[in-house]
Length: 503
Image (cartoon, rainbow, N blue to C red; front, side, top):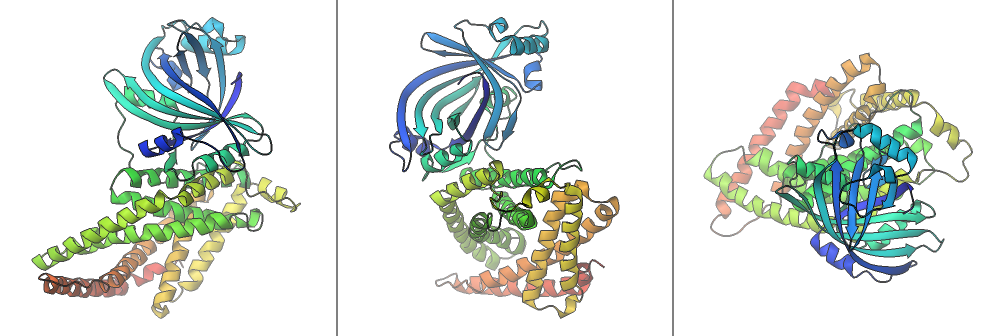
């Protein structure tokens, strides 16, 4: 691309997805022009004390056959696969960078950062890059590039299977339109780092399997508008969801399903919290899909809790027989969830969520008052939101002893919404609220969470029916577990029901 700010969307795919994309042909409603394949060898340079990395700058030399190119990228925006960074390229076939070849401004900035230190090669990347130029009906142009290869730093190596969608001209929303169509049927997750980050991670020995990821703070402050805060919170939700989709696909840590479920719940809460400033119905498709995926994740997560927290801690040969049966069911549930996460609908949801977040999908075309709501300071909005959700909890939890099982479940959901809203807005809340509210909410969630787990155990164990030589042992284990945890639930309720009030 020409010197300027690059706008691109990056995703990581598996081997099967890469093979599928390598034969990309026509796409509905889009014009696809194959641009062939090149083999690229890129070497990244930095000072011995990694001054460029510390400042978010990457400097590389790239060779393609006999030609070469020198590129520098400066810090910019990078949010869950979507990168916007100032980039400068010059033709150059040398073996060490020549900073003077860049335009005056980037050359001066690089020289200031390097400050006379030597530039040394740190890691390299060899990829086969296959490219397509794709045009939308509106005339937007996007380049799609499939990179297959490896990064190398010393004796360490990591594979690269990445797809980049770079905006050549037109509206940035075209990135999402093209990606949604091209990635249909391909399991993917958004990249959380640029290629130079991969190289530095290799250099530091920090490359490993994708693991479960907890929610990252949105880092709000009083100077932000409601819209800016909403966008940061939605980015946090999307990052947690995408990362744990990847964790489930590539590993079997039970925490992956738990964190994906949390991420989906946080998203649904965020969409409800900010509904008053969104165009009517704008977020409904996302909320509906998040709810559908939550139900799919629940089957795996509930089985994890049943086995690991409710059955496994109990002793006896009969319990071992029950565990063997439940492990088979857990394996089936995990396979089912992995299949769901590989479906086109899940990929569409991830792209639609990112598009909604980055292309301001909440905007209305006819609500003249929306701009003022979005531009308002977030502090008062945060206080009003947490106060409103707190009042809903207090209203239902005023008399815990009188609650029906259905009302307890509703109270648990209200506490969760309050907790997520608290987490979103914590930096903006008064110290007195932070000091008093969170411990009470945590205590209530603990009580209601345990009681809900025991309730789910009853539902799931009541569904256990087996035949054969181990049937009697399994039936005894089921009865033992249900009796044990029923007594435990009663004791918890008698001892801690007062924790459900916030008065």
